[in-house]
Amino acid sequence: MGVEMPWTILLFASGSLAIPAPSIFLVPPYPSSQDDAIYISCTAPEDFLGANFTLFRGKEAVQLLQAPSDQPGVTFNVTGGGSEAAGGDFRCQYGVMGEHSQPQLSGLSQSVQVSFPVPTWIMVLSLSLAGAVLLLAGLVAVAVVVRKAKIKNLQKQRERDSCWAQINFTNTDMSFDNSLFAISTKMTQEDLAATSDAHLCNSEPQKRPTSTSSSPELPEFSTFRACQ
Image (cartoon, rainbow, N blue to C red; front, top):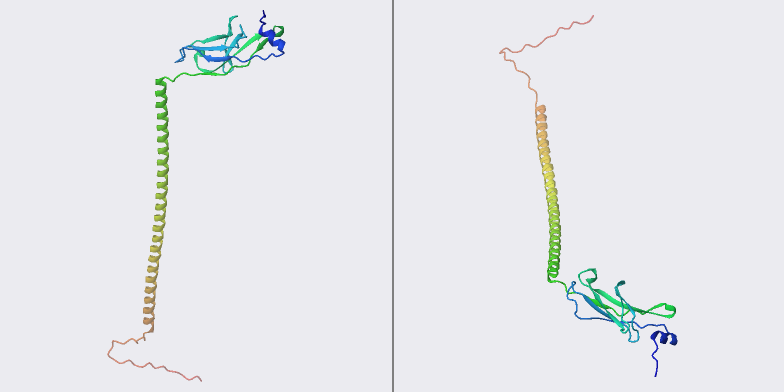
């Protein structure tokens, strides 16, 4: 009749302290909302009875349970309604007493992802907010495009106004120059005419004044006395 030896003695006799990782899975009823409880089973190999189990969510320890002396695993009940009700990435680990009463820990189990369906009102609200954000972004983009177009048109109008002003100014200068040239030409012609008239007047022979008297003029006589 063979005697069954405890697993710790078997491990120590074989010279190996490696502890297999446990298995983890969800247990029904499965949660449908964050208010529902989450049931997670964590089970060690059959030879590891009465082990101490730890449930992790991420890197945070959520619960600690010890299996019955005749059971290789436990079932965690993560109660809904609190901060622990949120889903996440769950793992578990177990430990046993080793040589010299020192605890030996197994590796972490595979992960179990727990998630909840998004409520309809949250989905509707999210879609509404997304639509509002997209609409606002579209309005801003349209406003920017319209503003750029107005600025471009205003710049073109200013350039056209500047061009017309320059052309009008050039025409005004040419008209003013033409007026000055016409006035100068007219004055030159008048000066030439006046000079010609003056020259003609000066070139006419001077007439001796005529006497209105009917008697002929008597010649003037001068008496000279010889100097002795």
